[in-house]
Image 1 (tube, rainbow, N blue to C red):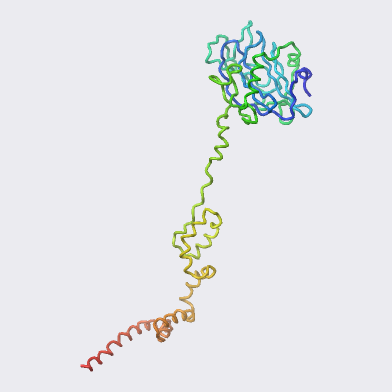
Image 2: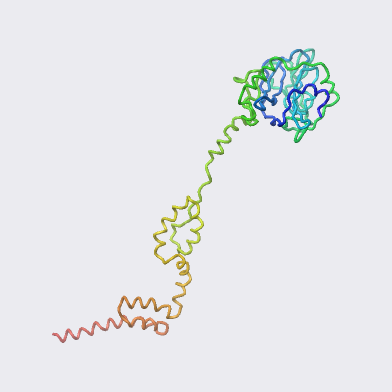
Length: 358
């Protein structure tokens, strides 16, 4: 439920929550006599749009600004407009910053119809202002960027009796310059929340209706937000996996199991081309996986395992005596030299025939 004093000031009802408040720096004070009016999310025909914070001349001396605020009630978000009055009233507990921490105002005060600025809060360093004091603000309100009161995720602040009284007291609405400032913001497409995604490129101005030029402040992250999507799209894809060390001439039966998994990625389809000519030498792959254990066992196997190789040698040499010499190797190691010696002995056998011919 809205406070009784605020119900008559409700001007907009929306069923969508406003975006979070952007983070921005306060522009410098343009001249003495201006008071700070924080920025806020307004609602128009195209949805939420940001009204930049700005320095405004009050309609009369001794008046301070109570910001407007969004509140949730009966399933809808309602906008309560701000106003000028002798004291600051309830503004939903919203932490607008720069003197508006959610309750009261600490950016300055009126003294003898002259406004004194709190240099600990206001940006008055670049202006020659004599009405200045410094007072640190102790904020006992939870600091967040929530822009509405009540409802799911909203601020749970309630107005005090003094704030209710301030709302009932006579006060002034926004000045004509403030109204023009809102209308100008409504016409800026880049201030729509649907366009800037909650990070307006013009978050604050030194004066009303000054949306360009010196002193205009962007929301923090406004520049990087526009390039965030492009930055992610331009990011290089993950580096391709390095090809396994297939160039190393290791035993092929051991390499093939490691080569099969990388054949699935398309960017490794060209890698197996180099090993293919060598892979054609052995029999089918199923048989190539068996030789690692069997060739090592054949030297110590029975003579039957050696006979195929001996038979091949017989077919090449055309003799039948070599298989018998190979079978004697286990018992007569010197028998291997006898075939060589026999061949040497056949040569002298021919020499007597030459002598006979003489």
